[in-house]
Each structure stands twice: as C-alpha cells, then as structure tokens.
Image (tube, rainbow, N blue to C red; front, side):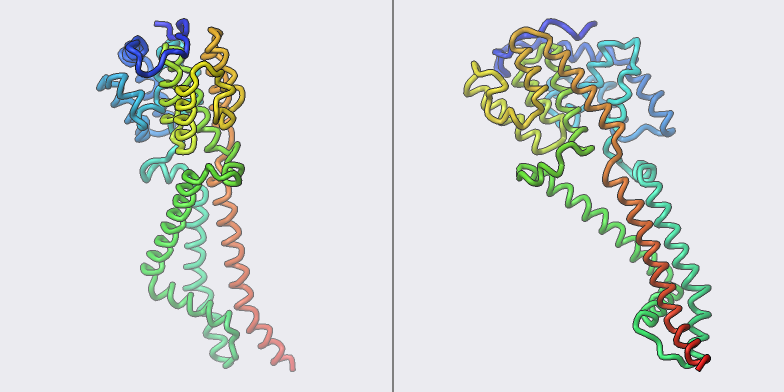
Length: 355
C-alpha cells in the first residue's frame, strides 16, 4: 500500500464525514509486521531489552488499536510518523533510523538512565570513592600529626577534618545524603524544564530554547506527524491538532490549537497569513500553502521533518554535555580545598620549626 496518495484540500475540516484517512492508518497498523520485526532487531543492537517507549509502540501495534485513538492520544500520536513511513516502504526501513532515535529521546527506567548518564555517574562514583579514601587513609594521619604538634588549625582545616570524621564514621549515612542530593539535583533540573515548557510563550524564554535539541525534536515530531497525516488524506486542521499532540511540547500544542482556531474563523485566508503562523517555521507554513493549492506539500513537509530529525540525532543534549564537565570542576575544587586545608597548617609548622 502506498501512502503517498493525492491530497484532499484543506477546506475539509475535522467535522466532515470523510474517514478514509482513518482506514488508511488502520491498514498501516495491520501491515506493520515488518516494522515490528525491525524495531525488535534494532532495539537488540542497543540493549537486550527494548526501551519502554519501544515496548509501548510494539504492544499498541500488536493490539491493533484503532486509528481514531492514535490520532487523539498524546502518548500514541508521536508514533504515527514511524508507523506510516514504515508502511510506505516496508522493504527499506533503514530510513526510519532518525525516527527510531527520536523515539528513544526520553530515558525511561533505571537502565535507560544509567545508559544515558553513564559518564557523569562514573565521575560521581569516582569522586565518592576518592573522598572516602582520603577521609579514612590520608586525613587521619595529618590530623594526628597536627594534634601532636598542638597546632592552631584554621577554620577550613577544621571543616575538612569534621567532614572526614563524618564520612569515616557514618559512611552509609553520608552515602545516603549524597544520593539524596543527587536526587534533589535531578528533581530541580526536571522542575526547571517543566517551568520552561509552561512559560515558553515569554519571549526571552522562547529565544533561549529556540534551536536547542529539545526544540528540534519537537519540531521533527510536529512536521513529521503533519506530513504523514496529510499524505493519508487527513484534513489539515485535524492533522495540525494531532501534530501538536505528537510534539509533546505544551507551547507547540497550544500554538497548533490557536492556528486551527484561526483557520476555522477565516478558512479562505492562506496559512501564511493566519494569526500565529509566524510561531512555526516559515518553510512548514509555505508547505501548507502549497498543499492548499494542490501541490505535494506533504512531501515537502516530509523532507523538512527528516531534516529536523537528522539534526536532532546529531546534536548533543545540553543537559547531558554540561553534567560531566560540571562534575569534573566539582572534583577539582574538592581536591584543591583538601590540599589547601592540609597544607595551611603545614606551612605554619614549617615556619615555626625554621624559626
């Protein structure tokens, strides 16, 4: 079955009785056996167990969930591009690689988190082992020497000795506190991301997020879902609404709904002149105008989506790249303060002995 059929004009709306596109989505789901086999084989290359999102997609395909649910469920809508593209060319599923990577963009579960954050977690574990070794093997020797010479210790050295005694005598409690601190840090990062998602309408927040990895991923999902739904004949307003759900980005979902409302108020107006059209990429809006004129706008949107997905897969995530260097800076500062705290009394001792 080819999914690149002639497009319906976007004068049709979601209230129309035309449900041919739903049947075509159902056909793609029914013919998804090659896609399911490819997903299982592809996920086995990353790990022995498929990710939670991959398992959700496979389970939903095997249960043959109706198309009406796929286009309205925010947890299933992001899978539509990979399903419809897979049905379009089942003989060559290698083109789905960027969409497979996009499918895994949210780490779920302990194993996924460990795999995604292995480098900073390794640095953190090494820092904890180093701190414990210094606390039980090195600092006690300096502490005993300073006591023997009855040195007057500076506040920094006293603080280091207190921390070392706590780590040596209350090791499990210290580890628990460190783990709680890491959990709080992750929670703060998640909270900041949640707030940024909800406040993205503010100009300076939107400017900061424009073009980052998360923005590229959401635009890939939005344009990819839109292109595939237009290719199967879904009315444009319904396709835009579903694409907003598939983007998994509150701001983009809200802007999609506003664009559809503006279209309903003035359906004769070109998409490029609709209020809120400037919140989307100009190339995507131009493709919608071409689709309106009967040109292959869905094919253009498909190429735009492929570009977004490819750029997304090649761009490192900021949250993943800064965490490792941040931990390295933390370990370096920890060692610096330890050396400074231990050598300040030594300098005083050497000065007194030389005098």
